[in-house]
Every structure is written in C-alpha cells, then in structure tokens.
Image (cartoon, rainbow, N blue to C red; front, side, top):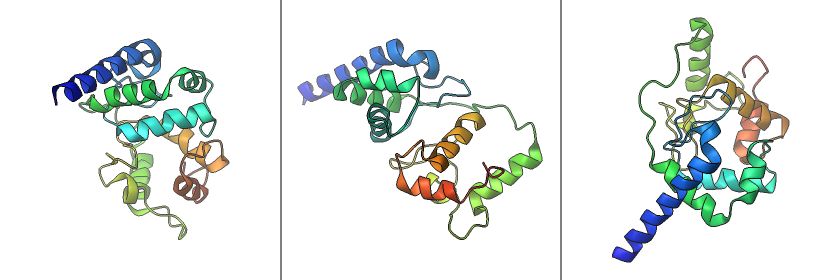
Length: 178
C-alpha cells in the first residue's frame, strides 16, 4: 500500500513538473490562469484531460499551440499532468461580470433551456445545472467566453471531432447563438 501511495505521489509530482515546464505559460502552473484563449484546467477530470491530450496528438483536436506539446508527451506524461491539474482547485469568481447583462441573460437561458431547436438540448443537460461538469463532460464555469465560443465553432465546423454528441449539438447553434 505504501508503494502504491508513493507511486501515486511521484506521478503527481512529475505532473506538476510537466505542468510548470510545458503548460504554465498558457494554463498556469496550477491550471487557474485567466488567459482568454486557453482553458482553465484546474479540477477537470483526469480522464477528460488525458482524452484531450490524446486528441491533440492524433489531430482530432487541432491547435497550433497544443499539438506539438501533446505530440511530445508520452502516455504516462499525459496521465501525470492530467492527475496534477485534476487535483488543483478553481477558487472564487474567475471572470468579470458580463459587459452586456441582456446578452448574458440570453446565454443563461439558452444554457438552461436550450435554443429552441428540437434537435438540440440545453447545455445543462450534460454539463450540469451549475456548469461544473462531471467525469464525462467538462466544467464550463470559469472558462472565458472567447474560449467557449471557439470550441463551439470548432465543433460546428468539424475542426474539433473529440465528441460526436457535441458535434451534433453545435450544428443546432447559429452564429448568433455562439
């Protein structure tokens, strides 16, 4: 049991080292960076993070910044950095209030109730009512509008093919919805 605990601690320590050397510039060493174009990784499920790293490496998710990094990471490296970020916590209100309260209210309504397209469903169905996500669907709370809009557009255009359900859902969104 002590060996397993020591191995797990070593994996997380290695993940922390990788996060500092490979990821911190965009995501922050603890995954709480507030860059508008990069996601906040703190507290995301490790399986989700590993899946995304693999998708970048395989070209199913495209990014000029992430693809080279994901390609050079071993599977073990990816697992370790995912464990590190999963153990970090996103605290406090990460974003400034909406500049346009009316637009924010429309977005909240679409998140909770959908956009009226019968082929789509509300975001809250999968990402949870409070947008914290779960092991299968990532947390959206705390991510920047810029990052979220880019991901929805990438799903809609086929640039991102990591989740068939999200690809279908994105097809129900208009440019104005995004």
